[in-house]
Image 1 (cartoon, one colour):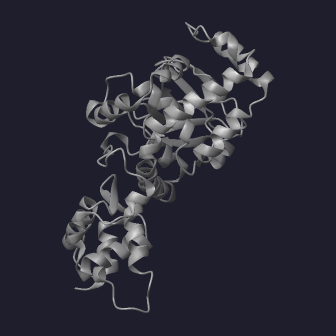
Image 2 (tube, one colour):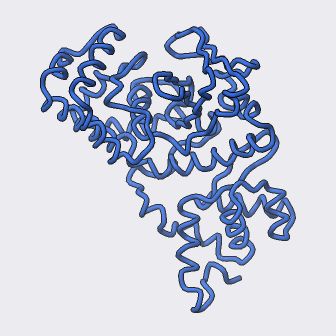
Image 3 (cartoon, rainbow, N blue to C red):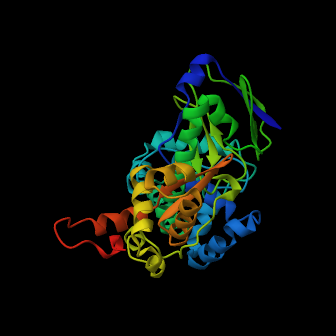
Length: 347
């Protein structure tokens, strides 16, 4: 079953990459992936941790988001913004819009929860349901959000390189080779739902949204001003979460034990070069730091093992990007430029 998206020259010109993943869209996909068994190496550790933390009332969220098919749109908008901002927008959804979307959703799914009718009549229940979804987000997605953003930043560097070197068509070719095929001027999507048909963009272009949980099949929506589809961050090569679930943005900026491997001038120079020029290839990194490609690769590997840089492969090139921890370390080590040379920069 294939969804065919038809492009014109105007559509190619207006196609763009989203700035990053969308928090509530990630929750939508995560609720589905949690109940599947696919991609065990990628997701099983997260599944175990998540099931252990979920409260019993999270079942309401599972009932509103089937493993396959439509979810309640007003609860999980694919919009940009912080999770806190988005939940406030959801709570402010006008009652007529809630009723309209509930009726539409009930006509699309095979089985509706017994509480569906209350959404159209009871504003307090709507708020209670939003609270459930927000709590579920805090357990399934929020602990990992810094890591998701880090992986997305690395992936975006690779995509922008594709765009610069080969244009939009090169970008479309590399989105998700197993499920998304560029057959000019048509983008062919294999959908998990089996949905098929033709979508004509008619000059609106296409928004490309990265997702980490949606690693297999693409999602799409054409109800807004610009249609969008999702693509997986880094394909199946992207490592999942080597960090524990308790890691937060502040914890990512602390010094890991493996930082001892960085106490050398050359390796610190390599880290600075990557931070100043995200997306460097190994050969470019070698050129900027005045070392051999083999040495640049070795230093980048140690930095990656320490969680200070991440890498992505684009064809035969390896691209290096600083992580949140790497940037935090550099910010801390250069905070006082008038004092003694920081230990991290001493040979």
